[in-house]
Image 1 (cartoon, rainbow, N blue to C red):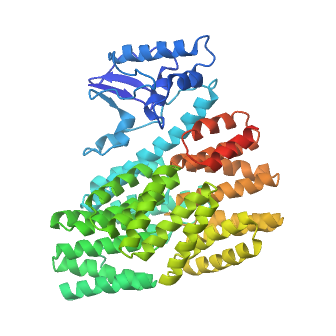
Image 2 (cartoon, rainbow, N blue to C red; image 1 turned 90 degrees about the vertical axis):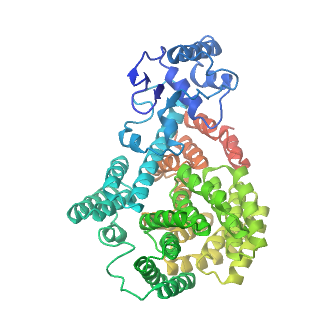
Image 3 (tube, one colour; image 1 turned 180 degrees about the horizontal axis):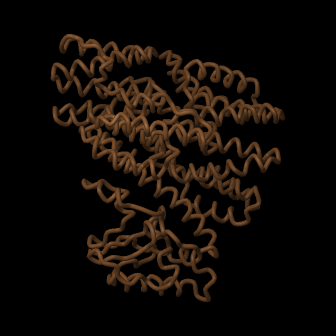
Length: 601
């Protein structure tokens, strides 16, 4: 068995023993690009990227590919044009272990170092830019897999085993409060309350020192609370559990979140006491979903409960509950920018789905995931089908939700007439359903269209209404989007002071909870940077560009990665524009293409 190690110092191992590495300092760069690029690269593109300084770039590439084949002892790999990236079943690439599902998660505990650690190709600045983005992305994939392993172990009662995975997630990204919460929850479930409280203190100090923010209540609650919390009073049998389940669902829909969560916790506890596994599975799925959608800062707890719901639904053959729980876990991952793990859950949900209602909900989230990553053709396909199926089964809230995500994709592509049509229908459905908890999102998107059309009064009315309602709902995503719009509105009016105030508010609001929607946070940062640069304020923009570039790379938001490089170009980085073109070559967005063209002219 041949193992290729790209994480940490690159190496080749045969049957666990190191063998001679390929000659040529760019061999590892060629291999990593072939294996990790969005599409199999053409020989000409790879030669121009890495060997443009050679007398014969294509010849230098041919020699390097041949050297890789000799080092592997595999004469038939890395051939063709574009270059075939498949290495065969007898070859294991460590990065490949992060993109699929594997029963044995133990190797995750031993993954160390960054992609191509120690490699420096300063003379190939476009490749260096690509490598930096990939390092962020791969690191985030490792973190996501560690989190998934920890949550799955917690859900099956193996909290002791979960500690190692949660600890590694914290070590990889100590600034992510959710990682600390998983570790606290794992420690608490083993009975080690002292260690759990110590970890809370560590997290609080890190967040205060490095980010200047306080930890959320969910972190401390993780040391004591669970689905079978002793705070939940005993009820009386299956009928009571079913009644509490329905009451909890109704309360959540009505916006009475605290009362709804209390009812759902009672339903979970009583269903467990009367040993009704199917009912407990449904209650766990409902409680997990409510924590994810209705209670801010509770995604980690919700994810553990959803894993438990899947376990019970699988045991009892409850397909519908399994679909719901898989979809909700996918939503958690998508919102957090963990694209691969999100799509894994959603593909499973879609495979189990049977009804139009189920398909519409799953495809809506898959469309959101594709749109966030900048894959518009896939996004449009999923969202169009979601809208169609939701209409067929009269699921008007789902139809409104998917239409709004569809409208956002058209808006980002500057297809404003199509965006307006989708938003008009979405808003019509939202008002008909009196779905006030969702209204600020399409309102804000509609106001952005008004801004583009020059209708300042309409934009101001929509944004002010959205802002007030978002604050009443205490929803950081809606607050961030509305504040961003008000910032752009004031920038358009020429009031730079008010614009800076509102955009600063947007950046704070969109980042104020641990389970933030990362796309909204990045979208807000992009607007803050653009406005600062438009007003010749590079000192404000420069640190935010670094934050946006890192966030967008970690969360696989390709279009925002490109925009971060465009901002770097505006700040005077002479190589950033070429890197932006390289990183944006696969993104099908006419507006982005025009932006890059305008910057080049």
